[in-house]
Image (cartoon, rainbow, N blue to C red):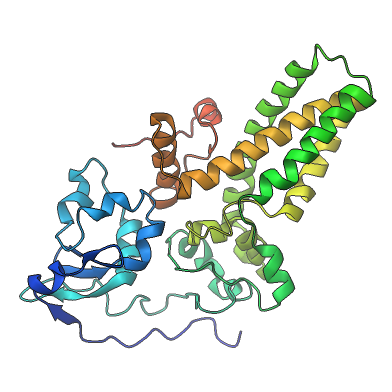
Length: 341
């Protein structure tokens, strides 16, 4: 790009609304709320609210300040407050509320135009890349990554492709190890479960030491910046983008194959096939759990806690809480993310 810093939009005078104006917008298709005197139209955000849209319903057309600050048992982070600003449409009459800045992008801050293909743009962020991607944003539709339609097609992965592709591969591999290559059937469950545990450790190591520790260095090269954005940075910038929540099939295969070959260094072929089928089972559970934690309605207490835990990794502290399908390795390595509520 010719310029490394976009020009921010000029400040505009805010509209003012009365309480009568606000109270009429209390429906799912027309949803306004008030926070600290500011008026927000959250209609397009309801479906993607991390805690579920039902939590917001009772506050539509009302002042949600107390609930937002933690009166309902969950205090929102500064990142959540920043994300909400994109839905601000004005303020209450006689309110002293003002936007914290005259624009969403302070002078000198680099930023992306989310209406255009993103991957080629991220190189302009330079040393601001790490800070920028950890300020979550929301789009009504999945973001466009590439101008090229073929690249764009393969960058999008609906959740159901994960079981559709990897479950048959898992069954075929396990069958080949036990039936075709004569691995002892009575040992298969133990080796399979070992593979599931191995995936849990691999999940943690990749998330902590590849996807996150790399953020300190990738801005030194534009190609590594773009690669990191495709693999993980995009998910922190747009955590509710439902087409980028599970891992694309081709990159997943490129990671899986070397892992399988590592098992082959220590195990015979048939044992490697059984163990790796367990790794694949763990991976399937991980990706589906990850999707559910962002878009599912968690009723069971365990999943409700895991959802809160993972969203805290996104919105409060991305340097802790690397476990997604399990907290086991966060406990082992001392990176468990403390939750205030």
